[in-house]
Image 1 (cartoon, rainbow, N blue to C red):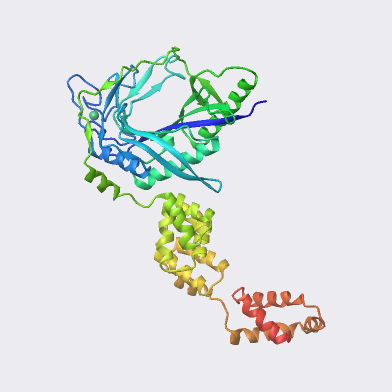
Image 2 (tube, rainbow, N blue to C red):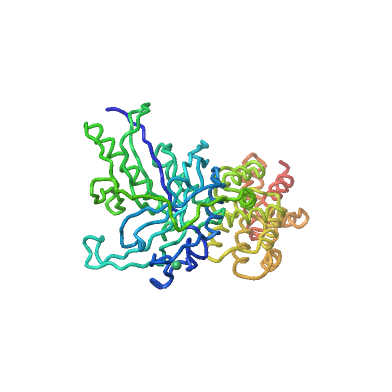
Length: 475
Ligand SMILES: [Zn+2]
């Protein structure tokens, strides 16, 4: 058996979160009644002339900067001609020869290793409409319906170099990319609604060889899991074919999540000729370098920088930092709390534990109220166990943490003067055991502590009780 290296490249389509479409002023929002958001421009009616949405160029540029790309001050739109019912003009406006962004990269962690995947290009293009078939596909349907609301929504296509080496890495790349795009606010990145879609190509080559094998393209992977599973399946299939002396055919496939297999798409055999030529109705884009720098200034702290800052400045573990980066609302809350309480580990433990569960059901608490709870715990006024109770009440009432502690009578009894009489009472009631303790059965200390905790209904500070007991018992 020959061993093979896997070579994976990704193409990701991202719908930009603009209010209007790319080349007309129709609304770009999701979920409107079918064909209620179209006009002669996005329907491609004769004589209608497109106009470029500046916000779409801004968002595409922002994505390019965040992905460390070179932003090309000259780029151009092209017509890609083909017929399909979801494409009313019978051509798609895209950027072929002169894309907006080139030569970027994205860094992300694979296990504990920081890896870099090259971004070959990012170009702008328009979305097609949506087809709804009465049957399984367009060929075996009695009829198909078409909704052009999505036609003309601005997209960017992000193309990576083939330098991803295994299916899990492809998933980690896509997760990091999605997080980055949501940080810069250019897309809502909802894979389930199609605003982030991924095509993957995969080939195998004999280990160490420089010659790439024949690649298979898998289209329209609509979840992280589907991406990883489809690539794992295809990696296995190709290695079996090659080991049996077979040949991989260059083809496009779809992924069937139900059967867990890739299926070749129907094709006419030849690569389609799109007859691509420069779009005559749109001028080339000439970006002003000052404008590009202004966009650069709007880029916020990105996920990887933030991860490193959580580790370096706050001493959090990779696991904790990743949680706060992946859930930016929790990350922001952490920063708000860290200004008021320096027990960073305690903050992140609280946020990742009971707080996360409650906040998912009921929404976030005001940071001020939460900070007060953390301070009370940090000062030792209540125990961790009691803090859980107080937290539940913070979500269900409008009282402050201190008010809840008072109302419930939760303060920790840590004052030796009030604890000593209780201690003596417990020891007096168990004189037989005290005798055994003094004769060397030191394990009984735990029993005495337990008794004091019982009498005080769990309010006594166990550390203080321990110290006082040893003191009283002369050990
Ligand atoms: Zn329109």
